[in-house]
Every structure is written in C-alpha cells, then in structure tokens.
Length: 177
Image (cartoon, rainbow, N blue to C red):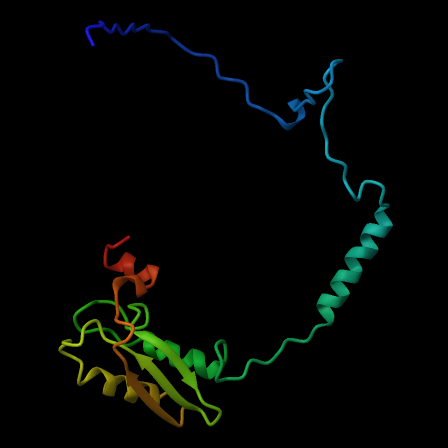
C-alpha cells in the first residue's frame, strides 16, 4: 500500500488510425507454409445464370399464384374487430392522458359469429373513481360501431393491472421510457 503510483502523461499531435480488420485477411493458422485465405464455398457457384433464373421464377410463380385469404370480420385483422379496437383507442382514461387500449386496460376483444362484441377489461385499481361509469361508456361506444349487434363489457380484477401492461407509446407519453 505504500507504493507510490506515478502517472506519466505524454502529449502528442496525432495518432495513427488502427488498421481495420477485413475478411480477406483471415488466414488458416494450421498451415506451416505461406498463409492462405479461408473462404466458404458457395453452393450456387457452379450454378448457371439460367438455372438461377428458373429457380427464382418457380418461387415467384408459387407465391403469386396464392390467393389472399379472407379474414373473418370477427377475428383479429378482420374489419369489425379492427373497428372495435379503433373505438377503444378513442376512449381515454379521465385521470391519465392515454387511451384505455394503450394503457393496457383491455384484456381481450371477442366478436361472436352473430357480431356481438365482448370486451374483457380491468381498471387501474378497484377504487378507481370511474369504476361505475367507465364500463357503461365503453359498452355504449363499442355498441355504436357499425356492424356490432350488441356489446358487453366484462370487468375483471384478475390479473390485476400494472404499468407493464402499457404499450410503449403510452409509456413514452407518460415519460416512463
């Protein structure tokens, strides 16, 4: 501990840039002779240009021959489902300036075959001041989406809401990111 430490400082005008490593510089260290470059063989090296083109055409023909599948309107990606999600994104929590969908209060949206919407949700706490009015408002808003026959809101407390359920946009809006 009694050793005296000395730090020497040397001022210089410039320093040479270190040489960048390149793939071409990779060598096989097992050889005793002149180092040789190590290269992986290409599986398409011996393939002619015309065979490459025909392989690409085969792939594209199969891809282009596929017909787009229709998504039922009640499933995720369907028009009615997306319209319900858009409506939920337009409803804001009165105490927090973030919509209830990005806030993570919506646990699930189900559209039945006869176009009834069932929304499963929670609130930030059971003692939330809007616990009585918020489910009714959401039921009314979702019920007004064109194509929805009837709407129902199921308020659940398990699993409890926590800030990890919020989307990144909501966290950013609230300064949590």
